[in-house]
Length: 285
Image (spheres, rainbow, N blue to C red):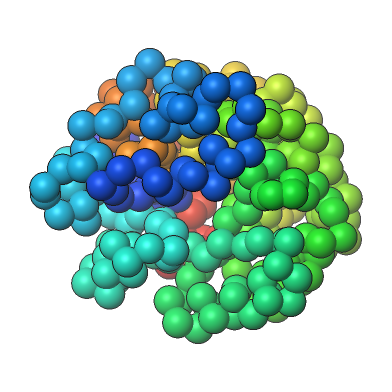
């Protein structure tokens, strides 16, 4: 195991606790099975969601920074959609890096929003949730192509959820096979998968072998559940392709993640790339 305190960890998915769970209303609007009544729409997937940090009287930025400092996380990638995140970027530019959002259903207004976030907040990447759009949009849909083209033009990666989504709505937009056509059409695009790629993790490995600019991040998975195919790939030919991302405060505590991390069987030469160097390369930190 590396010395976490000295490795300069970059967490490619971290956030701030809010007063309530209203941030997930856009997901609840599409649910039909009763899970729309959950505080956190995918909490059925986690043994314990860190709800105690929601509604805390403590400053949410301080809560997240304290968690980062405890476990050697030097930089966190955060969304820029809320006032708390924007304050964090302004007050702690050395600790947080902004990530913009995309919505293919907005057409050219969505592209203008990308440019505005890039110019106003200095975002180093964009995030996509194809199964979560309303209406849903496939990863390889024509509506996504202006977004990919703009990412190439701005020279920033896109982080895209892939695999069966946690919320209980259809999975077809995030089938991993859809990534293949995108990488063929946009060889300059840096594309990072989020949320596991399951049950197509073996296909994700094949595609990473095939496409130089395709990466995998570990968001939303406790380390004990990292797919074996991903660990094996990192330990052989994929040490430069696997990127650490957590899930605090959405579904996992940092303590849970880092406790589990001790038992991940990465080889010695993989750890620094996984926890820090690969993210720094694609985000140009």
